[in-house]
Figure 1 (tube, rainbow, N blue to C red):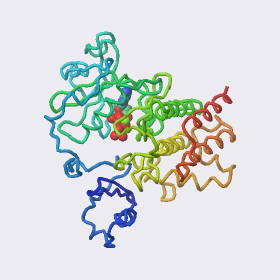
Figure 2: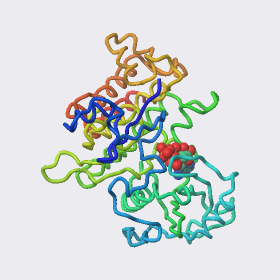
Figure 3: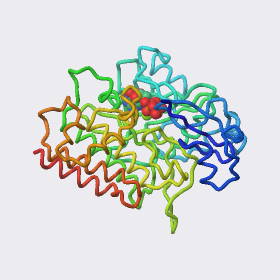
Figure 4: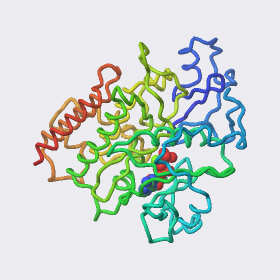
Length: 386
Ligand SMILES: Nc1ncnc2c1ncn2[C@@H]1O[C@H](COP(=O)(O)OP(=O)(O)OP(=O)(O)O)[C@@H](O)[C@H]1O
Ligand SMILES: [Mg+2]
């Protein structure tokens, strides 16, 4: 079965529902057939970002007409600690973006390892100075400009032990880059799903990572910060040498609602499997949307299975649906836990983690715990390990 993402050109929204059901949801005229609904582009992607197809430029979705030449540093809020790197310096730092330095690739572009002088923040020869990660936006692509800017404008002003540190950026004609602290253990995704068996994450390390990610979201959701991340998923949880987790990728982040508003409206964007049902259906974004995504990540950490995995039999492809099948019988919780963790945890602890994840995944957003409550629950689990 293929997961189909529908993009509505009229209001720039996406849905996993068919165009017909979206139309009836928005109480538009309902012609009854997909063929009649010419405003939908159907993108067939599995485990993919829900974002406009690359050929669809922003003019078509009602955004202001912008060309690369109209973007400038004036759009960047000024934060003294962010360095503006030249492209030349970043070429030197990454051996001219050499494949040897490639750390990974996401929808934004490629990520390279580079080296800079820690004090002057200038490029140094590879292997000297401090390692950094340099993310380079696909060249000539307009799609990532807003994400690039959001990353700078959020990570430039937010500081927390569980957020990845942005050191600087580069804007040079069509080139847009971001320079981060280097995270030696890469992403949680790499460890859960790609590692060889000799370096599997233990139960206690997994719980430590979950706690770190939860603290990052609790910080973002606090009244003073009031930011919704919208991209909480295993590939955006990066790990330092001691497996401290740091949340990355603020490209989709939004300011949370203020005053009497309970939500902010946005085009529906995110990654399949992590977005909560009410957000997909209505475009109403709340902090509880992040809580839902965190619940999915917690289940991935516990089970070692992906949120969506088409390689499993059909009743197991959606992790959340599969977990729900086991909830009626507490003794069967063992079946949900990654078999690579056998012997490292008690049934009681596994039950507590599943229970917490299920609370985060409540269908009604109001029934989900806030991230402070999640942090406390995970801290108590850590305490009981000692
Ligand atoms: N600061 C960093 N330090 C070390 N490795 C990093 C860092 N940032 C990213 N990476 C590596 O680069 C890979 C790609 O990261 P990127 O954020 O571009 O994409 P993604 O999160 O995997 O996917 P997407 O953002 O498209 O959902 C990550 O999986 C990770 O292995
Ligand atoms: Mg990422």
